[in-house]
Figure (tube, rainbow, N blue to C red):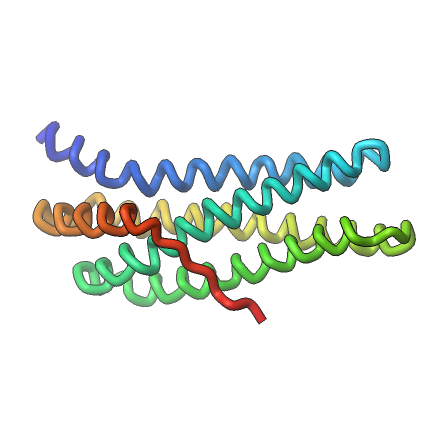
Amino acid sequence: MKSTTQAKNKFIHFFRHSHQEIHELSEQLQQTLTRLQFEGKIYRGRNLKQLMEVVEGLEDKALTHMSFQEVVLFPFLETHVPKLESLLQLLRSEHREFESHLMKLKASVQKWLKQRSESSHASLMQGIQEIGMCLIFFLRSHLSVEEKSIYTVMESSLKKDERSKLAELMKKGENKKIRWKLAVS
């Protein structure tokens, strides 16, 4: 019994580790937005640089994670755990919404970096704060839903042969370095 539990825990560790990395980036985003808002002009350049690094980190980690789910995990679960189909559709739409918000945040930071006028900085700051906080809460909620639904079901519902098949698909996906990006209009 212990080895079965260990196998399940190893199997799901990949996804939970990815969630932890993304959660840490959301924490960094929140801290950076707070510093940007309250530290003033002296630290603005440093804080904007840090904000762009966090946004690019989210772009890399979160979008790669979501891509992996959409290309490998979700199709597998639709076949082997059909009761998750509607939830998987919801999560797919959330992935697109997340990417859209992330690209808006990135564009706003880039615009700020190019602006020279102090008068436009206030409205850009407000927009960055709003998009950033929306992104943080959205991302945390999304990760929680995945943890409490998909990963829990994977641990409890997949049979040994299904876990082996998924592990094989995951390994192939990792080797291909799956990367996906929507065209945001």
